[in-house]
Image 1 (cartoon, rainbow over the protein chains, first blue to last red):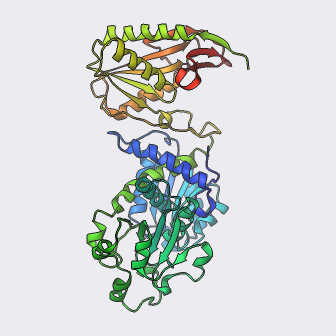
Image 2 (cartoon, helix red, strand yellow):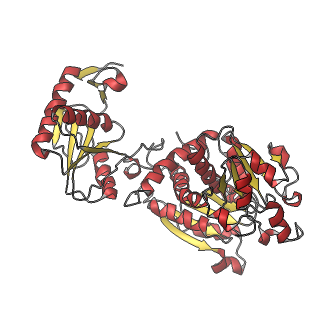
Amino acid sequence: MSLTVNHLIGIKDVTTEDIHLIFEHAKHFKEVLSRPIKKVPSLRDVTIANIFFENSTRTKLSFELAQKRLSADVISFSAAQSSVKKGETLIDTVNNILAMKVDMVVMRHSSPGAAAFLAKHTKTTVINAGDGAHEHPTQALLDAFSMQEKLGDLTGKKVVIVGDILHSRVALSNIFCLQKLGAKVKVCGPNSLIPKHIKSLGVEVDPNLMKALAWCDVANMLRVQNERMDVSYFPSTREYIMQYGLNAQMLEQLDKDILIMHPGPINRGIEITSEVADGKHSIILEQVENGVAVRMAVIYLLASKLIK
Amino acid sequence: MSSKILLTSLEVDIILHRLACQLVEKHFDFSEAKIIGLQPRGIKLAERLVKILQEEHQITSIQWGALDITFFRDDFRRNEKPLEANRTQINFLVENQRVIFMDDVLYTGRSINAALAAIQSFGRPKEVELLVLIDRRFSRHLPIQPDYRGRQVDVINNEKVKVCWKEYDGEDGVYLI
């Protein structure tokens, strides 16, 4: 079996079988990561460039570590210290990097569609590490992988995504991924942060957090992305916390245990209290741990298509 | 598809018992030895030999595991089909231990080469030995030879040796296809 795609631009493009294939490999890589020596030589003749036009801690480190665990040669690039500041275009920047014989590019960019643009206009394999408010496919894969680890088959499982859906690439990728795996998805947040046509994706909207929590098996809490907000979407942070902030009392009121996830970075005390983020329901750090294994699987499977 | 029988189920049984005796002769109570079956087809052989050692030689404390070498193979990106991984299960360190690799057929030696690299992720063994059921002569790409062999066979390159186990295939036996 091999992936049906040559790039990972979005979860929208991949099949359910692709997702299962990635998870199967991620399990093997997770075992590799538990060994005393956590490295395999598979990609020793592959060079990968990580191009980050937007800030990132987790994703960038996670990709770099995944690449190094697979023995790939890695070059990393942050736009802040580059010629992008001098006015170089995206395609020029990338073509210059590719001229140095790079086989694969992992890119994060603030414009939706940047990764697809790159895949179309260059000859390299592209992995999207987030493009604006469009998709963040590896995050969705690691979220679903972490859920599956805890809950088993996701068919019929209920997931609520809470918070800033409008600016969130994680939300969109998660919706596609979870639906492909047979889960039911609801979104919850202030009306101003829910995209207008979200229902056309087959997603329900519930403006009441407590009701949504009572319905779900998993709550994925998203960060309020202040940096993407050009106008005020809610009256005050205090009001947001009152309506959509998750705290321990709310979890105690439920008659069941639910999983709490967060893609990071966390605004502690806003969308989630520290008590919940560090509590027994939270699998936030497991998500980060699984991120490396899932990214190893994606890179390995795409690299296997780079036939010599 | 025509196939020729190389070993009958009785012959397989006799060979397994002989190999078990050879292992006991060398490793005695297995206090320092660890058995590693190579995925996917070496596992059954390892399982059988462990069973004989436990039941007929009363070596109860024997430790064994399964090693998958997919990510260590040297033909990644040289095949149209991606290499598919199997489960690795080694719940012990091999540091300073005598490791015995077990595989069904020794052909080019490339799997063993990969296994030698892979096992180092679990420590530095004192010694590594190789046990195979079938040793295909004159087909090696690398200077690798078995320490224990079931049967040596001469097979031309486009023929395939298939080892069948009764648990999977209904009957023990080795065939030339």
